[in-house]
Image 1: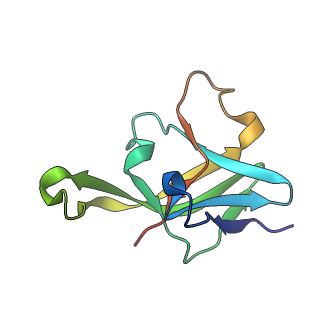
Image 2: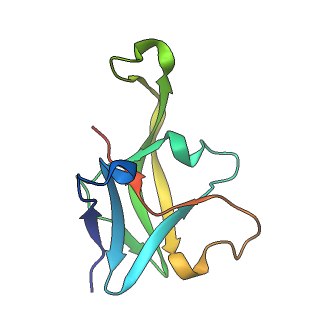
Image 3: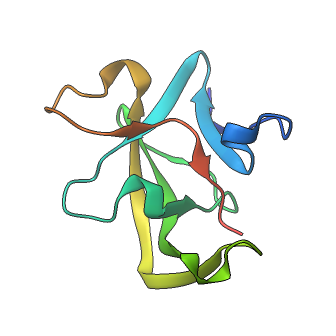
Length: 110
């Protein structure tokens, strides 16, 4: 089975505008990438499908930082750095390399 993007229901506030990746019954997640940007500062691009690399997947992403200057009228976003590759692991395998943060629902790039 091929991995596929799944969009969250827009009625769920916590994950509005987010996507997840599934492959058959498996759900994938992103782990904290170490010294790379925080998971909260990464958006994924759904224009390209996830690419299988063994048990993991790689997806196109970019690093963005939300600034408070635009509040309450919306977040002012500034793109930083080059586009990046984000590795996703099956949900049941996260945390096997030590303490880490994790996200299943990832913000979709605008």
